[in-house]
Length: 76
Image 1: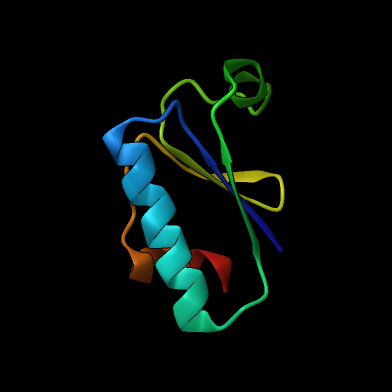
Image 2: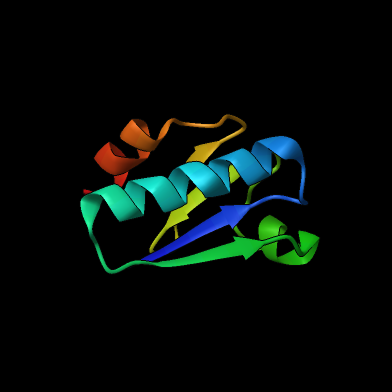
């Protein structure tokens, strides 16, 4: 599983990254976590509002910071 956090480095983007790390750790899943800050890559996903959560190439959340528990539900 590949999880990507799309964002330019704002506080909300960092918080989403931390929440995703926590969710992966708590689930004990083998997931690759990547932070994407390049605007052209972000726009390639069709995302106009960051932060965004992408799981295996599919945009799941944009413009908000889901909790670790919410992320666990999304990736299970």
